[in-house]
Amino acid sequence: MVKRKKIYEGKAKILYEGPEPGTLIAHFKDDATAFNNQKHGQIEGKGALNNRISEYLMTRLDGIGIPNHFIRRLNMREQLVHQVEIIPLEMVCRNVAAGTICKRFGIKEGEKLPRPIIEYYLKDDALGDPLVSEDHVSAFGWASSQEMDDMVAMTFRVNDFLSGLFYAIGIQLIDFKLEFGRQYEDDMVRVILADEVSPDCCRLWDIKTNRKLDKDRFREDLGEVPEAYAEVARRLGVLKDEPKLKLVDRETTE
Ligand code: TMP
Ligand code: ASP
Image 1 (cartoon, helix red, strand yellow):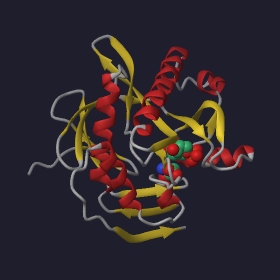
Image 2 (image 1 turned 60 degrees about the vertical axis):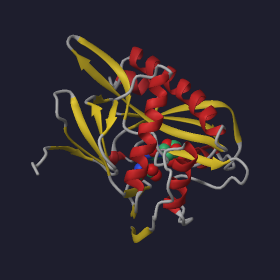
Image 3 (image 1 turned 180 degrees about the vertical axis):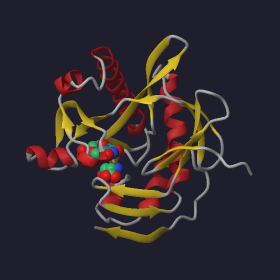
């Protein structure tokens, strides 16, 4: 085995140098963190499940004209992706109140929002990913106004498409987070969807029972975390067999 060059290690993924220039290998880990890294744990099988789920969703999104970094899945835990320069913003889109919007505005969890709302957060762990305004983005030069327009348009389009896709399998898309990056090709640059689309960065509730099928099971210690991820994968049709998954009890909360 040849040792690969590690480019970056994040909370849920490792990026290695890819086989060709302009490509990277994304390795999906079982590690889970929450509340700005204060809570750590391992969800056995999560990496493999998110790899499959993200492969499926990125492929479907490509099919409706959302350019993204996914090239092909390599194995259980790894996929080949285009290398991008990550724009340091988390684009959050919300349909139903959950998580931080409930606290911030005193809204009850589960309340339908008047319309889908997009928020921008600065990707900065040391600052705890603060909510920022469009004027902050422009004044500090984190993204150009054209890039912001493109990211907002793509985020709304992803919301419409994924809301319908999940509705068809009995799941309500409550909210999600997207990350975008700049892809440089010759003298051209374009903004494409990057990172992953998985139950780590979406809130997904069963339509009939409101059962949470996402990382909130880990954040809120609800149990049956891998089972929830596997349920999403199974309903999407990317998991044929019942996986033997068990949550490894290695959680440490600071
Ligand atoms: P929030 O309610 O905690 O602000 O999260 C909104 C959505 O964004 C939720 O689906 C979880 C996702 N998210 C991430 O994927 N990573 C993050 O770092 C944060 C803060 C949120
Ligand atoms: N992933 C982020 C963290 O590690 C936030 C979250 O998902 O709750 O803090």
